Structures are given as C-alpha cells and as structure tokens.
Image (tube, rainbow over all chains, first blue to last red; front, side, top):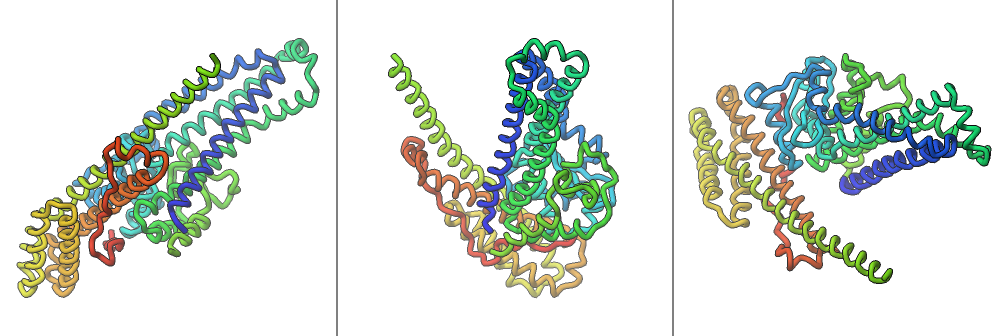
Length: 299
Length: 184
C-alpha cells in the first residue's frame, strides 16, 4: 500500500469528521432557535467563549502543562546523546526543528509529543520504552510522535475539544432554562411551531454532547492512524513502527498516570483498552494499526 | 452594474489564484535549496568525523591501510566537490568506503571494545542516518517542485517564477534505506 495515498485518505477522513462537527454545531443552533426562538441564540457566544477560554490556555502552553502533569524531565544533548541523535535523525527526515526532549520515569513503555507548533514542540519517552525497544523500533515511535507535530495534531484536538465543550455547555444551558422557568418563554414564542420540529430539536439538544464526544474521539483515532502513515513517510520503514507496536501489544504494564485529560497524547492509550469499547477510545486498536503497517511493508 | 461587479469579482479570484500558484512554485523552489543545504551540513559533519575515525582504527588495525586510504581519498574528493553531480558521486563513494570499514572492524575485537571507537561508531551511524534522511527530504522536495511545475495551474507561472525542474539526488547505493542496527 502506498503511504502517500493512505496519507491523503486519512487527511480527508479527518477533515470530514471536523466538518461533521461544524455541521453538528449548525444543527444545534437550529434546534436552539426552534425551541427558544431567536433569544436562544444569545447563549451561543457564551458557550463558545467559555469553551475557548478553557481550551485555548492549555493549547497555547501545552508543552509546559504536559511536562508538569506527567512529571517529564527535559534532557540535553550531552545527557543522552543517543536519544538526541535519534530524534534529530527523524527531524531531518521530516524537515522539522529538533523539539525539546523529555524522559518520564515510568516502567510502562510509552511516548508522546505535544506543543502548539513545531517550534514549541516537546517529545517525551518513558524510561520503560527506552529500555525495551531497540533503535529501529524507537525510530518508528519517534517518527510517529514527530508526525503528530508535523500534522499539527495539538491544534486539531484543541479545535475538536473546543467544539465538543461548547456543545456540552449549550446543552447544559438549555436544560437549565427548561427546568427553571423556560415555560413562559416557550409559550410566547412557539405558538406557531410545528410539534414535530419541537420534539426533534429537543432530541438534538439532548444528544448533541454525546454526538460531539463520539466525533471528537473518532477524530483522535483518525489522527493516530494518520500519524502512523506519516511516520512511514518520514522513515520509509514501516517495519520499525510495526515492531514497536507489537512490543507495546505484548506489554501488559500500563502508564501509571491514568488521567483521561492527557490520555490522547500517548502513542499507546494508557487507559486499559480492553474494558472500554472501540467507539469510546482515543486510539485505534493496536491490532488494526499493526495490520495497516504490515500492508505497507508488502511493497 | 451587476455584470461589472460580477466580472470584477471573477477577476479578483483569478488574480488570487495566480498569486497563490506562483507563490507555490517559489516556495517549493526555496524548500529544495534549503533541503540541499541540509545535505551539505550533514556531509560536512561526516567529513569532520573521519580524521578521528581513521586515527582510532589505525591504532588497532594497521593491516587495513587499503580500506583507510580509500576513505581518506573519498573524503578528499567529497570536500572538493562543488557541482551537484560531483557532490552526489563523492557522497556515494564515501558512504561505500565507510561501510567497508565498519565491516572489517568486525575482525578486531580490541578495536570494537575501545570506548573511543564505540562513541565514534554511534556518531558515525547516526550521521549516516542523517545524511540518508537529508537526501530523502531533498528528493521529496524536488518531487513536490517538479510536480508543481508540470501540473495546472502552477505550470502557467513557471517562467515568471523563474524556476525549473531539479534533478533528484541519487547516490549509487543499493542498501540506502537500510538503517544500521544499533541496540540502545
């Protein structure tokens, strides 16, 4: 399978999902207008504003926040020459500046990258992953992480999080208005409304946060799949990443930080995958990722 | 009135498209230059490693003077190369010569055990990876430029942007893609 075709297919798919989110916002605004009349629109700027405020700060300072949350320690070139070399090699292949490199004291093999743009990127490895993987495997992992940087996935997930957050807030506002005295307003505004549209808009408003969450997770999974393919575009070596993922699949230890807040940034989901359904997962299954890489090794 | 406005809007859109296409060509051309500069940087790094490497190996493996001489000669050629084709050819020769050296060092356990050589070997294999990735990145950029030159609408602005198709950087090396295996 050609990595260039896979790359554009994955990019298209994640743009479609982002478009789906925009569409969802449109439908929710329609529902608000249908249910509450024009005044319902007034809450939209508040919801979007609050969501933006809560996401924007963590997006802008993501490199610093994540280092604090995961307890990663920055390393310099002289402290770990081999690791620095390895990351530099991949950056040359990707045409990216060398990011800050950090190590997390943790026995579970895992890695992540974040940062608002390539110039503020940080890549981190657990001590576990440095111990169990050889250079070719680590190169694959590094390429996957640098692919997130190159594809601006911190930005993509910040957009998805903002939209999902705004929709959750809208739905919440609406519930409060309905419960605490929305009745009068509804009688005044909606005398001429058709009841089916009213019920439909009610259902939309109730289901919107769940739909937004599912879309957000689907986007996260697509970006993971895209990062695997982009990693192959950097190294031209699907075998390294495939072997690395097999090591992760065989390993049963899980990163101690089980916080869902940073779950999406690791190369392998730190939350126990077997218990949650695929629909609610931030990552595609390791088995499907390995299968895609195997298909790329075929040619 | 409406017709005039319509024509103006169309013209503005066309002008924007033209500017974007032309910029695309110019940017692709700059990227190729930058990518070539990166190859140059990595080749220089590799050249700088060689005197130290040769000295270290000499101490343990005096019999391999032929292999060492080949490396010194290839290095001299690569530092003198100025044209694009010469740089690539000298790069290929040096890559082969270095690989030959690393192969014969297998026969010298004392050399392989020396800490100086181990550090050099890591440095060298990493530099080899960097050189090969720099070539690959260059070729990817050439590919982008050359396809922009050939495809519509950017093909219309090739003359005005002053760009021309660039050659791929090819070294004579059958196992170019094979990354050396070094255990962490």
